[in-house]
Structure formats: structure tokens, C-alpha cells
Image (cartoon, rainbow, N blue to C red):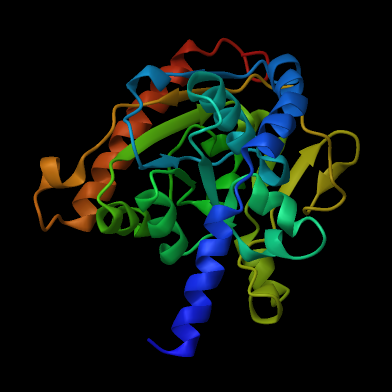
Length: 273
């Protein structure tokens, strides 16, 4: 093992072991009233959640103020307590600046296969949003559509760690403002992909500033957010020892789309729920 390998492993272990259940419980105590009163949040189906490590695969909604993680974490910790960590795979930018340690201590880890594998093998619950920014800024006209943008790495993560996928769908977050466009062509026109490796420049309309291209930042509407946890998927049991990744991905998205359609059918009005 080279010195580089040793350093990488030390950094990896440091990320996973920095989870602080006491701090996380305090943070959730502050967030819970906001989630319950402002967003009237609900997490359904946690009684189906499997023991041990599990990869929660979810759609992503709400733009810069996505509430998917706080809503899920609040429901999960209420059900299972803080002895079972919830880790969220997230982008590196979160771990820069003075708040980096806070995010690590509350379960956020850098999105790579090594971190996902370590967390899952430790028995942790790992949340991943395969669609990432492509999904979280989808137009409001596609708010109830499961679209990961062709990303399938989550399946490899589950297979490598030998854990089930737990599909989870959320509705309401994409009603927090009017999302007009991902701004893919605009990002190319402004060469943001070359200068900042940014492939989108999302356009939205909200309160109080009206039109926004990320900035100025509008306040999210008090939309009702509901999440549904679905039956776990044991990939090997259902698809064999050498599964077709595209087939598994299509199955996961199909199951999630069916559940999201059901939540949409229950919804009486946007925002109100």
C-alpha cells in the first residue's frame, strides 16, 4: 500500500466517523417545527425499511432550497432514532469554508463510490439523488417526472456494498417556485461549461424578486411535501449475479414513477397539497 493509499483511507475514515448524533439531534430539533408547520411534511412507508446498510435512491426537488434531505432525515430519525446514521452523498462545494465540519458532523459526505461503499458497509443509510442538479432544477411542467439524466452509478454502489436499494419519491418540492428551464443552452452560450464546468443556468420565477437565474434568491413557497418510501429492491435476488445495469435502472425508475403518479393523483392543488 502506497503512502497515497494510506492518506486516502485516513481521509475516508475521517469523513464517515465524524457523524455526531448529538449535534444532528439538535439540528433536527430546530428544523422539525419548520418542516412540519411550513411544509407540513410527511414521510410514509418507513415501516418497510430494511435493517442494516441501505441505499436510498430518490428524486430531487426544490432548486437551491431542496428540502428532500431534511424531510427524509426528520422522518427517519423519528422512527429509528439517532443511533442509525443517515449519510447524504453531496457535491464537494459543500465541504469548503467554515461550515464544512458542520455538514460532515450531520451526515453529509462527498459523493464518490469510496465514501458510499464505506458508509454502506458500516451499516449506514446512504441517500443519493442520481439526477443531481439536472433533476432538482427540472421545469415545473415535469415536476412529477422521474428523470435521472441517464445516471446509473447508484446501482454499482449498491452492488459493490451488497445492500438493497430503497426507492423513495417526493412530491411538492418542485412547487416551491415556478421552474422555467434548466438553462442548458444558456449555460453553453455563456461558456459556463468551459469556465466553471457548469452545464446548467436554471431560470425560475418566484417571490419576492420574480425572474431569477439562481440569483436573486427567491423565498420558497410553503408547499406541502410528502415522501413515500417504497419496498426495498434486492438487485441480485431479482436480477441475478451479473445484472444488466440498464435493466435495473429502468425497473427502479418505473417503480418510482408509478409511486409518484399515485402521490400526484392524491394531490388536490399545487402548494396546498
